Length: 157
Image 1 (cartoon, rainbow, N blue to C red):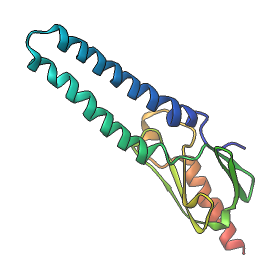
Image 2 (image 1 turned 90 degrees about the vertical axis):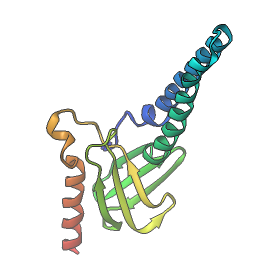
Image 3 (image 1 turned 90 degrees about the horizontal axis):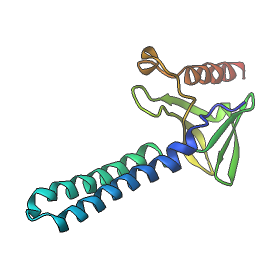
């Protein structure tokens, strides 16, 4: 069963292009305005702001979006992780900690592994988005369920 969001592709690939494309368009409009305006100092903030927004946006994308894996599938006692052409199967008992973001959009769940895999020792993915006021202030139910399942598996052994 797929436990990662189907919106991951949009957030990782499409949204950054739209964001940077919009800012590029804004800069082009600002440059065109500079050539037509007699007072060039008024237009300058319209060029500085998009460049600053592009830098801040890229840093946010880098730390919040680009490290998300494409797909996580629940296979019972294992999770199948896919990112691009690479795929790996990870036992739930190999997960040391489950961390879920609160008040972050898009939501993310980070799995800390006992033994690193080909993706490293941390795997972050975007769970399905839950709408509502209460959902923003509590841990994602999928993270809570994973924590319980991992705990049951540890106590079973």
